[in-house]
Each structure stands twice: as C-alpha cells, then as structure tokens.
Amino acid sequence: MMNRYIKHLRFIPIAASAVLLFLPSCEIDDIADPNNPTIESVMENATVDDLNNLVVGTESGMRNVLGTYYDDVGVIGREYYRFSGSDPRFTSDLLGAGSAVLDNNTFYTTNPWSARYRVVKNTNILIDAVNNTELITETQRQGYLGFAKTIKAHQLLMNLTLMNENGIRLDVADPENLGPIVDKPTALAAIAVLLDEAAAHLQQAGTLFAFSLSGYAAPDDVTGFTGFNNPAGFLKFNRALAARVAVYRENFADALTLLTQSFLELNTNFSRGVYYTFSTAPGDQLNPLFLPNNATGEIRIAHPSYVQDISPGDDRINKVSLRDAPATQSGLTGAYDVAIYTSNTDPIPIIRNEELILIYAEASIRTNQLTNAVTALNIIRAGHNLGPYQGPVTQAALINEMLRQRRFSLYFEGHRWIDMRRYGRLGELPIDRPEDNVWESFPIPFSENL
Image (tube, rainbow, N blue to C red; front, side):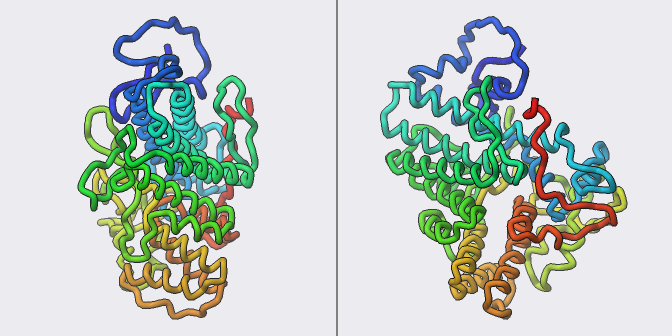
C-alpha cells in the first residue's frame, strides 16, 4: 500500500508525490492520520507549517540518486571509471564496450529521471498549495513560488543534461495526462522562462523567507544555502543557474548580464556557492560520491588522462589520490582514486563561484571581449598555482584554454561530458578499448513510452 502522507521528518522526501507520478495506482482507503497531513489537506488553506514541510521534502529530494547521475555524466565524459564488484554496466554500457548500448530500462537511466521528476512533482504540489491558501501573506507567497520554480527549473535541467537531444517532459502536473516530450531547444527555453518567473517572485518576496533552508552555519562556511537563504541571496543563486542555461543556449550576451545579477566575484573565492548537504543524523542522507581511498569492490578511479594532462604545479592534482596499488576491471586500469570528498558528510556543489568565473570567460570569448576573457582565465590559473596564459589571444585558442580550465576546475562536478558535447568535441575524449563508444544522449526511459 502506498503512503499518502507528507512526512514531517527533516530531509525525508515526500513519498506520496513520488508514487503519484511513477508507480501504478492502487486502491487506498482514506484514513485520517493525526500526525502527518495528506496531500489533499495542503491543497486548500495550507498553513506555513504545511508549506514548510513541502519545502523540506523538496530540498531533501534534490539529493536522491545523485551518485548515479554523477556516474552517468562522469564515466561517459571520461573523467573517471566506476568499478563495481556488483554491477559491470558501469564499464560496459556507459563506456559503450563492444556491442553494449545504453539501456532505456535500467537503473542508470530510469532512476535519475524518476528522482528528478519526483522533486518536480513536489514543487508542483508546493506551487498549487501556495496559490490556494489565504493563510499566508502575499510576500510569503512570492518567496515560496520563487523557491519552487527555481528548484523545478534546476531539476528539469538535470534530466535534460542526460537526455540531451532526446528531450524531456515539461508538463507533468497531471500524472494521468502527462504532457509531451519536447525537444532540447524548447526545453531549454522553457527552463529559462521558469527561472525568470522565479526571479520575479523573489524580487517581491521581502527580506526573509517564511521557511528555512539547510546551511545555517557561520557565514563563511561552504554548506547548503548559507548566504543564499533569504530572497536576495536566493535570487543570486537563481541568476547563476540562469547564466548556466544561457551558455547552454549560446545566448552569451544574456549570460554576461545574468552574471551581474548573480553571486559572481572575479577573485579567488572559488568555493562560494550553493551545495547539497549531508549528515549522519537519523533519517538524513550521506554523500553518495564519497568512497574511501584504496577501496576495493566499489571504486571511482580517476581517468589516467587527468593526471597525464594536468600542468606541472597545478594544485588541482589534489582532486585525485595515488592508490597503494592500481585497480583494474574489464580491461581498464587506473592508479589514482577520485579524492574530491574526504568524508561521507562533505557537501556537493550545485553551483559555485569558480564555475561562474568560467562562464564569464566563456561568454566573454563568444562575444569577442577577449581581454576580459584572458583576465578571467588568469584568475583561475593564478588560483591554482599556474602562471598567466601565454597563448594566442584568439577565439579559437581561448575556447581551448577555457575548456581546459573547466576540465580541471570543475572535475567531478558533472560538466566535462556536457562541455565537450556543446562544442562538438566528444570525439576528442579518450577511447580506452578499441570498440568503446562515447554516447551523446541517454534514451528516454522505457516506461515513458507506454
């Protein structure tokens, strides 16, 4: 029997919203639960507490199946190998070994897709509840709507990142009557509009949200939404995401404008940003990207080219760690572990200032503001113990340099495959076995075609 109740526990995703969209229906007797409100109970005159529970569930759900998502983009993007003692598909299907292809009905396709749409469903419930209550102020309403639409846009973008030219569904408000799968340009345009709508809400949301977000530590801590947990700060996060979308759409002048409204700082404050948070608290989640160094069985091994291609003295070499002994599986060998995270409670970035500096560099290159681009790229280089850029100051040469800096600065953050695809360079990614392939897109899940 499906659970129809919205949980109060912090960081427990809303199970009811998930099953409404993805699991077959079953007959359920409506039994009142004095401890947990039903979805129906928040659809009319929801209280602040009701709405805040929806916010908590939404933020929590954002972290679900992150490990599989990052393995999808990271392995195909040849950033690392995922060796698993229990599942060979990380080294077969994802790498296109022999006759292997990406499966439209297995975990690495269906689980990320479903997890992101569960969050989208949660945001849709929150939007409907906010628009159907008279128990909050108009300022509070604008804050909830700004939060919900920003997160909805982010989750849709993650699924589009995987599906690429195969597209995604935008309209999933009615699980019995889902909207069509739309193409990539249409989806990107709609995501940009959704972010703009959210920004308009946030501008009318006053100085404080009616809800809390994770990350209420010291202001300088890198965790959760620290520094972005009020309407003004969250708006900067929203505009940062919009700048990412703008470069994906090749709207580079717009990206530069959006960056001025974001939290971009052209200095070496690279880590400032918004993060997924994790803890060992009961009911919470652990960082799924953390695996201990020198592990066996379940391993993430840096692709050998990362170490081979990095410049001498570049401190980003510390993102990998030399193993006591190389690891081998399925004809693949690596001597370095991925070492970004040192514990199972480390935060994972959603977007941070180093990416924004690189977006600024890219947009400057593509709008022929080459001096500004060199300035930004040199900020990145200096921040990682490298001397100033000495190459030709041309668009072609600076694009190469920008992609190189993105490769090492944003390693293991889900960008390499997308970047090489955006620039038509997937053919430059290393092929480790003669019959391997580099995929461009994931297939639409089988269940979506029923």
